[in-house]
Image 1 (tube, protein in one colour):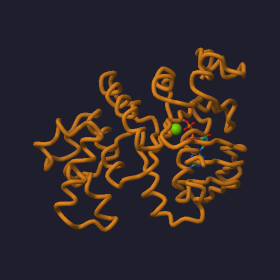
Image 2 (image 1 turned 90 degrees about the vertical axis):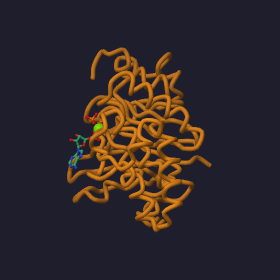
Image 3 (image 1 turned 60 degrees about the horizontal axis):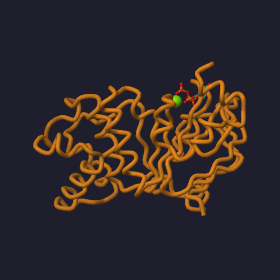
Image 4 (image 1 turned 30 degrees about the vertical axis):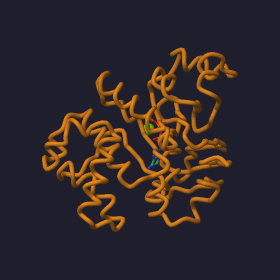
Amino acid sequence: MDKIEIQDLDLFYGNFQALRKINLRMKAHEVTALIGPSGCGKSTLLKSINRMNDLIENCHIEGKILVDGKNIDDEDVNLLRKKVGMVFQKANLFPMSIYDNVAYGPKTHGIKDKKRLDEIVECSLKQAAIWEEVKNDLKKSALALSGGQQQRLCIARALAIEPDVLLMDEPTSALDPISTAKVEELILQLKENYTIVIVTHNMQQALRIADQTAFFLQGKVIEFDRTQKIFNDPKEKKTRDYITGRFG
Ligand SMILES: Nc1ncnc2c1ncn2[C@@H]1O[C@H](COP(=O)(O)OP(=O)(O)OP(=O)(O)O)[C@@H](O)[C@H]1O
Ligand SMILES: [Mg+2]
């Protein structure tokens, strides 16, 4: 069974159809990249996977998304979001300490024991490859960190609730090459334990980290295949034109 199955998904914002008959499958412990020009529906699809679009008035969805074989619409949304964590394009930390940012999620899920929370915070920061940089400053404001550190802290915060799936929307678009390399290395480590779906505008990044890649254009998946195939021998001319930089 695939970890995530998207079946004939149509999504409308009012009268505007943002996604058209999307069919994608994602295996556990693989990284899937969503690529395509601005406005083609990548973030919309990513947000659908943990029902973030529920919050948008007049957003209407047809078709279905299964996670672990279960229709996500039948699941409690809080449990779904515990299982399917998300990291956004811009670091969106709370104006609190580094520690409290990471402990926040586990606390809302009912973990109160201080020792247990300490363990979760340390483990999440280690997994997000930022522990060494912040271990002596856990009480410091998260907002005092650099952009690259903040983004890794966002990843730690997402990991702290122990999801199975990690959705990442352009997690490195605001980062310098060194921080980007750190986050990419991290993603390759994380896939041992998580199923990752990442939106990126960086073709080289998709090539470096993704097992499979879906190319979107105007709400449709034009081509979906193993990453090497998409980049080295795409079936569609539109895919070739996009990845060689002819448009977008
Ligand atoms: N809340 C909303 N209400 C109405 N239309 C929306 C909403 N969110 C997105 N859209 C529209 O849906 C389409 C897809 O948007 P989406 O954000 O998914 O694109 P994207 O591929 O992530 O683009 P980018 O690369 O610029 O982030 C766009 O035409 C956008 O204007
Ligand atoms: Mg987007």
